[in-house]
Amino acid sequence: MLNRRSFIKKAGLVGLGTLLPAGPIGAAAMRSHSRIERSGCGPADEEPCSRNDPSALDDLLAIERWEDVRDEADCREVVRSYLPPSGRLKRWSPIASSWIGPCPFCHSGCFEVSRELYACTDCRASGSPVEFIAQAESLTRAEALQKLARMLDAGMLQGVRREYARFWRVMEDAANFYHSILLERPEGERGREWAKRQGLTEATIRQLRLGYCPSAPDTLLRDHLQEQGYSEDEMRVAGLIGHRIGQQRLIDRHANDVLLVPVHDGRGRVWSLLDEPVDWRPCQEVLWGAREGPLYSHRYDRLVYPSPGWPQDFRRHDQLFLTQHPLDVLLLRQQGLSHVVCPVGARSWDKRAVLRTACAMADHLIHVSVGPMDSLLLDDLLKVVAPYGDRVRFLTLPSGTSLGRLLQSEGSSRIAKLVASAQPITRLLMA
Ligand SMILES: [Zn+2]
Image 1 (cartoon, rainbow, N blue to C red):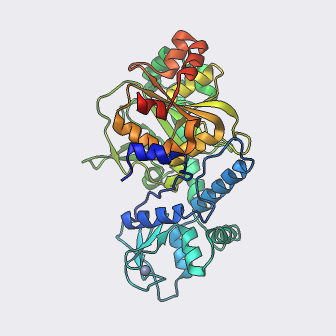
Image 2: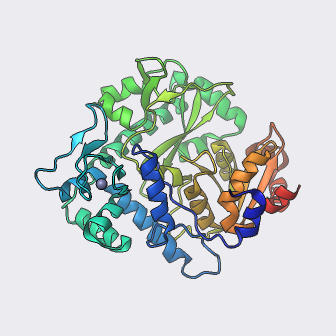
Image 3: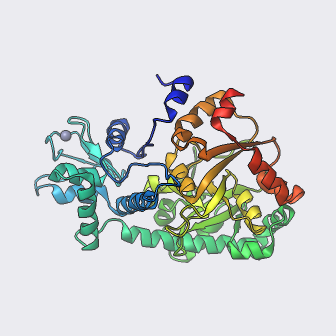
């Protein structure tokens, strides 16, 4: 078993992270897939981008390309295109997104395929559409990726492009609606007051198209989108509405008194709405089925706000803050400090992809946390950051403070001092 001491010893030798798939297929697929990823035979391997390595950008672009193609493919459609007419897939259940059928490789009936992954519990074949094509045609993963991209470009496969188009449209309408609430609607009064107290200017609110969702009424967005002609199913799969646990009524996912930050890419497409609680609450109610939609889960996990574009943002900063709080990003950017991002989907450090994205943007990454970190957390962090060595440093702020508040109360010189005090994880472990 890997303990802290042995890990430190080996840290310099560890080169690769892994892209663990998250999806409905289950543990068998995850074990198999992670083994494939670690085998180092394709462009999906996540190598830290070394500042002195001229091929680092090419590697990153190859990974992004790999991710984009995988995002656009529908594994169910890929599998169906390889099955004979007699080998039909059937829905797992009337409401499930997974399908079952004969395994194309061992012909057993233990084969399951979802939007993202396939897995056979008999012959243990599993992976993404890329691995499926590679296995079906005895290709390398790079060759299979090229073939999948060609099939999508030629229209031989539809993928999920249509779903994406609808997803971006409903997300755009939702972002505009929440923005109008914060700017001018009566339901946004509490949000406006809070934003003002935090120091957010109207110019920032308009420029970043910030929004607000009150806790009540809890169907504001649902009612608005219904008037615009969207179905409940479209809203649900976009993650905009859902059920509270134990309840049947569909309500707005963000109906929890939150500031909303639309996460868009360089083409203006809204991928997600980050929320920042207007008031601290001891317990957030969890919504079942709150995050679905066409987004491949791994893409969601690697997103940061603001979203970078390649190659222009590759190693753009000397130092980059990684904070958990969207408000920190807003307040620093309002003061002209652009070297700060927050994760969008990954709220824990076991999501290595977000670290890869952030580290590709800067020579040094400063992870900001509030309050002391216990040894268990440090152990988890060590496993993730070891490949990056001292390029990742840690900054622990006193409880009750935040990066944004320190900037407001003590100015940018305080931020510069904080940068200087950030520590590599090896130093934290020895403390
Ligand atoms: Zn099989």
